[in-house]
Image (cartoon, rainbow, N blue to C red):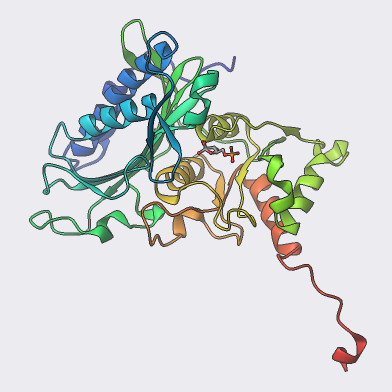
Amino acid sequence: MKKSNVDRLITLEEFIIQGQNEFKGATGELSQLLRDIGLAAKIISREVNKAGITNILGVDGSRNVHGENVKKLDIFSNDQMLHALSRSNIVCMVVSEEDDGIIRMQSSSGRYIVHMDPLDGSSNIDVNVSIGTIFSIFMRNSDPADYPTDDDALQKGTKQVAGGYVLYGSSTILVYTTGVGVNMFTLDPSIGEFFLSEKNIQIPEEGTIYSVNEGNYNTWSPGLKKYIAYCKENDKKTNRPYTSRYIGSMVADVHRTLLKGGIFIYPESRKLPNGKLRLMYECNPISYIIEQAGGLSMDQNGRRVMEIEPTHIHQRAPIYVGSKKNVQNCIEHLKKYPKEEPRFIEKAELQ
Ligand code: P6P
């Protein structure tokens, strides 16, 4: 187990207050919002960790906006997060993976908008694989005296004021950034407190783990096929072949990538031209965290995911995210072997 770089126990609340004091003119609203999310995470963690005992498991018969079976824990988590976000007049709108449209909160004067996936990876609930909550926080552009607009909910990832995730695994951890580094907190369930367990996390500049669902190989671009072949080649000098790890729960795969380095990929494909993962509440917050930790998060064209201009709250985006050198190498392969295999050019055409 890696030694923590934290020299004394400090709770999430203490850390947030300290951080707020460093921001001159901070109103404390973002701090309150982060504390509220931390509370929801504790409640969700309790239910996730006893799901096997109560009858909360299994499908309740309803389906979410994407036609996927919604498991009861999804609904519980969504309800807990919405309850936490409505406790104070800080949030004016919420976008959730579990809801078709924008949720306008009681107080239209709130200055913040939250995008969230309340329980990502829910297909893993019944097989006891780690799942997560992902959140992304923006400030509204419209005047708080007016009603918030749809445009307030469609800002590109570079405008995020905070992004984070909770991972319900062998322990429950909360990782977030407000743009001044990435910090990790571990829940002590015996007292219900998150304690700072790793501060200012830096992702390794290069790693030897690649993470992608190879079951989709036949739908990939030529460049991605070449890159994954590169990962499997024998070359001691560059520590290849790499190790393949894929949990199928984004938060778990990304958290491993953050701590151990390497690359996580959910690519565009013939089956899913924009990939599977959602820009606003999966790709953007994860990209914010990895960039703040010194990594990269790109689409297939080598464009920062956080530069993608959103047009729909549930739009999907391809994501190549992780250690700087691994992502750069992958994008080079994608560019070197473009989508259409270059067709053989007849000599006559060259005249
Ligand atoms: P696939 C889980 O359903 C999820 O939304 C992400 O957490 C995960 O990275 C991805 O889908 C897994 O998708 O197609 O590999 O099963």
